[in-house]
Image (cartoon, rainbow, N blue to C red; front, side, top):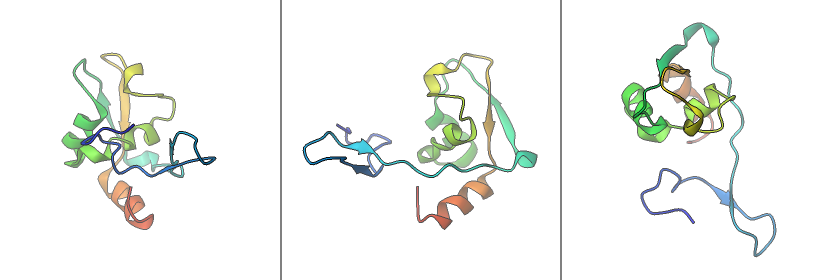
Length: 102
């Protein structure tokens, strides 16, 4: 179940077999250029959505941090002081525009 207003509201879903619970569709993996990366030091109150709003002016780009930091299962695995990769916005927009949305 996806709650109204959730950041997952527009995420495509599919069913493997009729009657199965729907599962989220997967995006292709994207690698960002290492030469133009920034880093963010995680704080106790941080969320991927809040960091996306800070760096990209869009909380809906939260997924970028999982793409750029594939060793993370979720934001729950981060502790204060951990550093995460923050890819440049121009590469993200190019990726999103070339695949027809996110």
